[in-house]
Image (tube, rainbow, N blue to C red; front, top):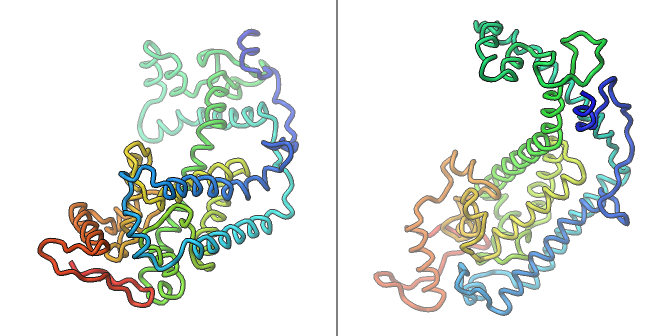
Length: 382
């Protein structure tokens, strides 16, 4: 019994002393709050700079979606104008982050033993009501527990409500009633839930919030012609996107489509500063990847959910404006029928655009220029 308790690191006699204390920062010379604000910008600069080097030295050209001449002839913005817009974006982003966190101190955290002990109590309480739930829906918990005893004593104890040596060892006060006992099973499940399951669920919730917000606000910018003309058309001045231009957009779009989505996600999912810096940095890499203009065969994002550089590049074409609104997943596009599904037709249109750009004539078609009406790109007629 003593050995078992020692291996868990928890006291068997009482709950640990629970008090909050400032969390040590990841880097000793900068607070986690400040690092969470500036890290996505650093990641953006590094990732965008990497792809810019590929463009400059024409490396991996076989994986480019568009040839270089497409960018020069089709884009309605210079790279220098784009860079100024991107700098403005990050100035706004950092300023909003500093404003929202100007009074925030270091994150206050409890001792791990305390957090896991509290979670173990929740596990114990949930375990104790299992028999009641089973009996309520017409299942005899006692009989089912007895039937499972021969094959899995632990499962049998869980079905029966547990509370004793039948869940390995008791690591709580022997003076407590059996139903109040905390077992090794309670602590093991509590540790898994606290350290692994809960953070995963937080990231999933944050992803759902951001993906949902961006899909519907992005789609609104295309449905409402006034919003498109006055705000979102600025981003679509890039028909041929490149990595560091990923967040080139009107300042209103910067605020209400991008920054607000992450503020909402952080609040709803209750992300800590460390979780926020990881989540925002991963999202930054995804955004850079969507606009990089390369489709690498080893890109894991291509196989994760189909939402990659090719998926988003299609949206930047005049004939794909009403499709592929999502940034991180394909859930809402698939559900609401806005995914461009005809890849053969997309390939044909890409071929046609390349031919028009290079001055060549596509067999069976007359040469014509893409239609653009003062920043509002018209869809090509099929």
